[in-house]
Image 1: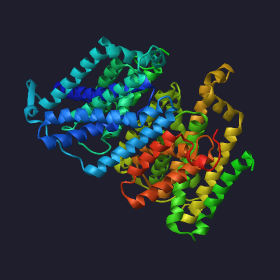
Image 2: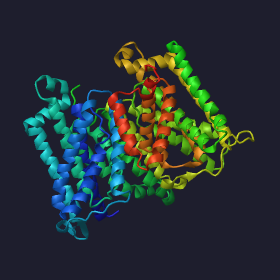
Image 3: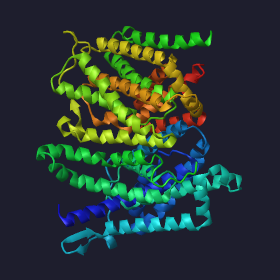
Image 4: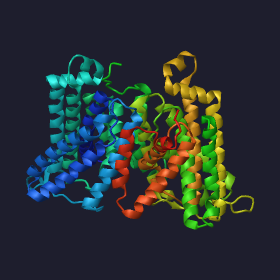
Length: 307
Length: 311
């Protein structure tokens, strides 16, 4: 394995980590603040990708399409919260699982009915196409670098928002003790809608960013949702900082594991056995990581809740 | 009619109903196969009801144990094993053996953590199945032959398959009833209602839950093994998280914590899917909102319609 390959895979890992963080940030706050399990968060990511494909094609501009996508994703989140999820706060988790599972089935199928099962193609915007020479012999696509930068930028913004503003303080307080925040006179209903809509927008943003480099297809949000769950579990429910660290960790472990596990296995077994065991091991790595973290810290790396 | 009489009447009616399906339809292959599919899934759903309905632990990885049983049968079959007791025994063992470590880690947590972790481990096994390139990988694996038993062919015809699965379903149901009624079952249920009190009374509740989790895994393994024999095919889709979700839907719509509700739920979900699919290929557009409505209206679903209080 060469240094160049290692660097490229590290950047790929960062890219996955950044996408995971954008999804997991909303997810962890919804879990933390509302004690609500939202399986439908992954379809928000899928909707973001589809919205971008539709709006970018309609307006002919990626930037305009992205702006419209963010607005539409926010709207979807708020409508979903007002229409269905709001009535399930404080109910048994089983009710929440049932309802959000139903929403997944519906939205995945709606997307299939509207756009068909075949993956959609989205062009990388003209200004961001091409590659950048990072080192002699190391070319990396500009768009992917911008994606990583945008994700890190949003993470920073979110950090400032959560730690240095009044609304962020309320969200943090809500994550550690929602009943007390309500008793102190904060309009928890509005806070919940805000957190939910904002989380949906972040997931939609991730989907929109991923649209030009991944295939846009029904069900694309399902697998990444489960990875985002792993991120939330490792990071600790309700903690944005934990989600950030865990997302980068999971992104790097998964990507590097997939590219190097076969070569690593070859050190301890013959190459045909390694070709079998390598991919199997690689697909298990992040879950093993989760199990290890749980064994040491059952509440995740950065638990937010006081209780 | 007293409640206890009604409690035993409904399971009896269900059993009699399944037994009569081939008689009433004159052995119609489509209907009998539908009944077999329902009964296989119902066995798995009963297993889930033990931990979800009685233990109040929302396990979202049940399909992994179902798939483990299916793969145990599939893999042993490709290596030339055909003895039915061996294959089915291996299926049960595979489900239970996987449930032990997964349960041991997952049960360290509660609430939404438990849901997410069982989901994640289920997904891990799904990806493990897709990477089994020696056994078909993504594409899955066709069984070379069906299992035999002492020179007979129990899974050979739909009719004998039907009654073998019905017998096993009855066995699992009665076994489940015995477990639930035992001291073990009462501790499990009490732990779901008030964990602190059970711990204060000196019961190692996590150990009880782990045993229940392993039993549920073994039952799911049995169901998966039978399902593999039924379809003569095994694929990673058996372990998909959507299937885990479907098992939860079955148990919840049938009414949690009654065991026969799981059977009712399995029949309801499969029949509803079949019925909706006749109108449109996009039947999930109707099925999804139905689940949302069921959740909003409160659970207990089919069971309440039949006038039986849950729990």
